[in-house]
Amino acid sequence: MKYFFFTALLWLSFVSTQAQLTQLQRTEIEISENGTDNQLAMGTYGILLFGGINSESKLNYEVTRYDTTFKKVGSKQFEIPAKAGLVDRLVSSDGQTLHLLFQRKKNLTVYSYNVVDGSLKVLGVKLVNSNPLEAAALLGKHLYVWTQMKKMPLLSMINLSNGRNTAMVLPMQTPMANIKSMVANNEKGMLTVAVQGGYSKKNVRKTHFEIFFFNEGKSQPTSSMPLQNEEGKSTVDALVTWQGTESFLVTGTYSLDKDALANGLYLALYEQGKQRWIRYHNFADMGNFFTYLNKKKQVKAEKAVQKKKAKGKEDPIEVLMSSHEVERLANQYVLVAERYYPTYRTVTHTYMVNGQMQTQNFVVFDGYAYSHAVALGLDERGNKLWDHCFELENLGKSYSVVHHVKKLTRKNEIRLFYPATTNFKAMRITGDAGISSRDLGSIAPENPEIKVKWSADLNAQYWYGDFVLVSGLQRIKEDEGRKKRRTIFFLSKVQLNTDLSFEGKGE
Image (tube, rainbow, N blue to C red):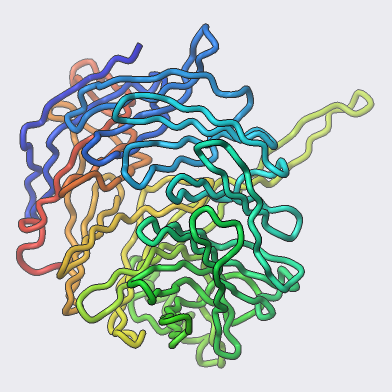
């Protein structure tokens, strides 16, 4: 079935002047192998590989579990419906069950794989319409999914024990609405849904933002709260971060004009059912927003912004940003957001009309690309203390918006881990607003004679403890004499030597 090229790298460190990460183990998988399309770190339970397989039988999908040393524990093959696509993957709050969601029109099939006993449960659900799932969230024993139908969202609650599908109520007062985020908090047993309502897609000034709160198993919200903006500012998106039983934060991006592009980040504090304050931070006022560019391009971009500001424009920077949940560090809040943009390609269609060859060009969406990320430090009243920017390189494209920056929050610091070209970088943010970043080096084979020609689709997932699961594609040259090259998919267990990696002065 699968054939693995396995190498145990016993505490192999990549030595450089900036101190490093440690690659403990590495597994190489031929890219032609089946069932390896997706990788998921499952904490101390190990990792799961899953994907389609070429089989003569009806079984066409496989989930395989490996322990934390990449030793195979077991696998399960099963049949997925014809033409059904994987639309989401969710992990239970105890980390023991992976839920794979496949959809074909109105038919949603949920495959629940238990990593402890290797069992598989299959649940079929009939959706209200055939539109593709926009998002899903898992709260206890209930799965929440939403699809967009014309101008309004349809939110459903599915009981994973019996498959009962219940429509949920979103009492918006506007003729059109769109869900911007769903956040499940298993400790509180609550789902928060941020909804943007409006009267026109083109005019975000007339939109209304409402946050609904659902207790697990309930189809109607227990309460709702509006996001109140200052005059002339509109909320583009919103994400809820709980920080206590009666307190939560809302963050996202805002706009100053009539389109949906963002001009800055905001942070709002809610306590005991009331919005206490909201603070806005314009990208044009961030001194480090363009530092990810080379010096020449940075100067050019900053001059363009200053020229627009001199003409009285308050929105010289308009971008798409994806916000992370808010992190609390000492007496400050830390916001992290990643800038992305859509890409397109031209497809040529050739056909015959009355014996004559005709061609027609179509412009189609080709995925989201990512340029850089920003980190913003705010005091307890939401006022800016500092801002920082760092480049995101060689990330490939995704057909949905994802987060490439991984966070590990500790008592006195926040660690960020992210890919950069063929290497990985780490950043440490401390409570005194100090920022240190380090180039951790590349993920390389054990044999020094094997050269890595290029790396692509690098991905990092927090695993457990100080360990990170890193995966990606690499083109390697195995033999200098014969110039043999091959492309492999690799998995690496990486330990962040956090104390060593940040000794001395940061970049």
